[in-house]
Amino acid sequence: MLSQQEKTMVLENFAKENQPIEIINELNDGESGAAVYTVEFGESRKLGVLKIQEINESGLHNKAFLQSRENSIEGYIPSIIDEVEIQCENNLKRFGVLYELGGDNVMGIKTLKYSLENELALVKQTCEQVAKFLYTWNKPHTSKIKSPIDIMKSSLGYRFMDEKLIKAFENLTIDEDKKWLVIDGVDKFFPNPYKFFTDEEVWNGTQIKYLDSCIHGDFHGGNIIVSVKKPSVIDFGSYQVHSNIFYDTRYLELHSLMDYLKFDNNKQRKFWVSLCDELTKNVKYVDIPDGDGASILRDIIPELRHGIDFLLSDSRNKLYEPSFYLAGVSAGLNFIRKTKDEIKRMAAMIYAMYNLRAVLKHELIGLYNPSLSSSTSVKWFLDETCAGDYLDNDSTYKIDEKAYHISGIIKNKSIELTVEPIVNLNSGMVKSLEILVRDSRLEFFPYEMFEKARLTGDLENLTMLACDKLSNYLNKLTPFIEEGLFFKLQSDTTRHTIKKVIKKLQGTNLVLEITQRIPRSAFWRNFANELKFKLAMDNFGEGNSNMVELIKMKPHYIKISQEIVRDVDKDEIKALMIENMVNMAIKTGMKIVAEGIRTVREKEKLIELGIEYGQGAHFSSAMLIDYADYEIWKRGF
Image (cartoon, rainbow, N blue to C red; front, side, top):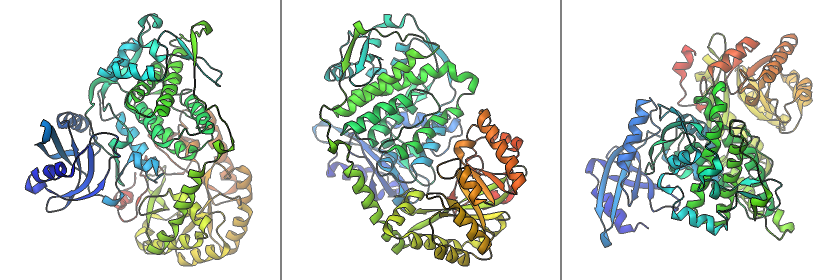
């Protein structure tokens, strides 16, 4: 535990030009001995991160920094500005390291762990950026073949089956001699990680192909600093030169789930079993089951998994799938070893069991041959079940508490507008813009903010606040809205509010993009005819944005959901679906915009299918309206 005296000593020992002037936020959550703060330092009050701990990791951090720079991955690993060492009482040392962050809104900077636990809006964007970082900063990647045990050793290092991990197994009452485990209440056999990684003979000489590279080694949400521009990764104290490249991804996945989910009742524990099952069915595609927290998990888990696209082509995926699941086992065992929470320790054990089962069942391995005579059961579900187990009072309170903040957002006008270009896929020129609204403090997802406004009766006030702010930027946006300025409205917005929006934004090529929370397509079609404005149906293919509602609405633009667009170059069914939509659009005079384009191949396939317009990270993510890349947009993509 860092004392105030020790902290003062560290601060005072930095060089004068790097002296931290003010501590803004404390970023760590007390899980480790390190203290982490956002600070302003130097005369120009630059933004930085100060970390104080008992070990000196600056050498490892610099190795990782140079590795990322060699791979042209700038900004994700902050540079070290200064470091100090002080001698404390009892012969202890403290090391202070000052990292420089790029210019940003200091009040908006949090860790990914904090952002996930509080369901802040930047989680999805951050996970997408982190996924790209994970497979690009550490090149080259070398293909190797080793035994499963040797690959596990490369991931866990000294932690592999050490005294601490063995004790964790014993605390869970896992029997080393039993090859198979059964979770009471789950109709499946699972391999016992304790047995499989202490007895080499059970593998029958199996070798697994994996990609060897350097890894962070302790890649969890507390070591990822979230900001508006891009995340910054710190704490390279567990940096390893040779390891399974998938380890960091799987450890971040598991640790994030442990940070976010609760296991207080059997409903939550059943969800965990279902989730672990889904997480080990496919390397890239995960269908998150329904349950508490499912919504935000559907935002983050697919983003982390799709990062594999930066690493492997389809033809090579199968060869490395066993090593992906093996990395999940490594992550599970490391968490089992580290956590002091007995319930989460068992949850991590189940995660490891499901991943090891996926390794053995894989067509390239074929070692899943459970035996009842060599099995034992483990307990996960609670004995007592009552109505209270299924009531989530905490979640209800959080909803009410967050909704309460809406009035403050409106009163203080604390919203920001972001803008995303919509591009003509053939010419590469920006022809439209989409406007999104978010709160300045990033406490809400955009859709969530409007949901809470609906609960408090502030939907019109929030809509008009956004509209008023947008009206100040119309001259700046005019060169980019030949096809239209897309402004999102909730489907249950009143006629009165719609008229006020149209009046406020009159003179622009306005397209009202309707989020179909409540199906009101016929209403919108009739109202559009009456007031002469254009309509766009958002997220076609999801929820209430379906074919029946499309027929009723007859919008001018159909925005195809990114879930349909993603991997369209590889998925024949998606391609056929889009091709049929294009034919329909041609005959009805509708125009199609493909959302969420991420790769050149997706763009090229969409052009081949006849899609004229698109948007997504391949061109530009949504950017704050004051700082968007307008000069680049003028030149086109």
